[in-house]
Image 1 (spheres, rainbow, N blue to C red):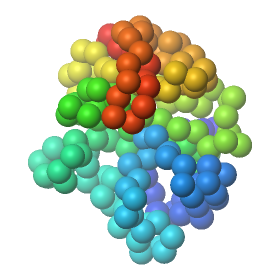
Image 2: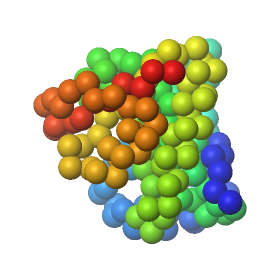
Image 3: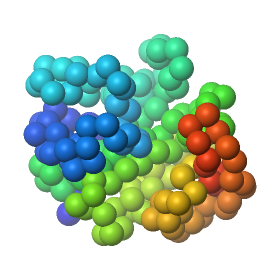
Image 4: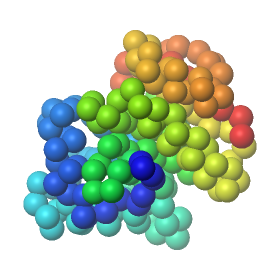
Amino acid sequence: MPELIPPSPRLHESWLAARAEWGDEAHMDGAGLGYDDDVESADGFAAWVERLRAYGDRTLPVEQGRVHATYWWIADGDTFLGAIDLRHYLNGFLLDAGGHIGYSVRPSARGRGLATRALAEVLYEARLLGMDRVLLTCDPDNTASMRTIERGGGVLEDVRETLIGPKRRYWIDL
C-alpha cells in the first residue's frame, strides 16, 4: 500500500530507476533535487537525503534562495513512486511561480490517484504547521495536476507569466 515516508537512502536504486523514467534532464517537482546534487553514488545520495531532512528543521539555516520545507516520498515498500514537499513559507519566487507544495509521480505510477492522496495528507500537515491557506501552481497544459489541485480544494487565482514560464496559480483554504 503506497504511503508517505521521509526520504530514505534505502530507496536509492528505486529512486534512480524512477529518475530514468523521467529522463536525467527532467525536473521532478517536490523532490528538492539541485543541479549539483550527487545522487548517483550511495554516499552522495545519502548526503542529499540528509539535507532534505534538515530543510524541515526550522532551527537550522537554509541556503540562499531556499526556504524551510518538509519532504516526503511516495513509496510502496521499497519502490519509490514519487515525491511531495511542503514549503513552510514563501519567498518571492515561490509566491510568483512555485507555491507551498510541489509534487511529482513517476510516469509508470501515474493514473492511480497517488498525487491526490499525497496532497490530502500534506494539506493536513500544513494545518498542523498553523498555515491557513497554501498556494499550488502547475503548467497550464498539465491537466492531471490541475485535477489533483482542484480535487484538493484548489481555487484558481490566475494564470500568469513567471520566471519559469506560464503558471496556473491555485489557493487552497485550510
